[in-house]
Image (tube, rainbow, N blue to C red; front, side):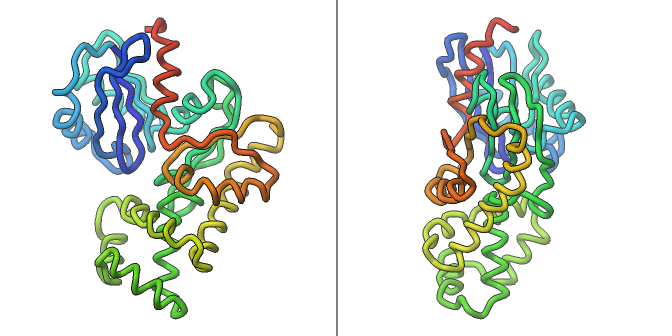
Length: 285
């Protein structure tokens, strides 16, 4: 049996599949980004939420935010091997490879993630052969739920022109300025906190202020994450995965048209595609 995990900064989807690709067990846990959680904390989550619900695991394949760096991937693989001891060592990959395999299977293309974070890559049908540096929400992540939420908060707290919008926001989330700043600067996982405001952005997408935030972010995503990959690959298919891409698909597609791009597929989660991909690679272990 193959245990597949797709982990963002917010949540992790787990599927235990057989060689036909049929799902035997489906589980969820919180996101297991090794930049935000220590190995002992990751192990605790695995033992508490996953280990007791599955059996007969032959291999674990983990795709996750923060796992693109070899050191972090090795740290997580060691924890997985301790919790799920098998003859086959656990395989840990960055979430962008998971997105590419899910979206394009064994065909070349450009794969993009728009969820809590954002990323893109050039995929040759087997490996990632080109990327744009992913710098996190302080320096990058344009178009992500975290940066959309960050830009919304900044607008609401700094501008005096959005009193009605500000009032509805505070009423909706039962937060004041002090609590917001405390959660961003003093509490763990500020990215998840900021990304939690995407439903408010989507609900008020026609508001001029929020419309500007959404479209400015998506244009920046194309500028920084797609155009550099597109220069020498003008005909490759473009596909997206992630909750922001899925729920803001209408707005994302409008921006794509501005760049003369066609988005061939938008998936909310890469898991179904990963099940299909790995059901054809069972013989490799």
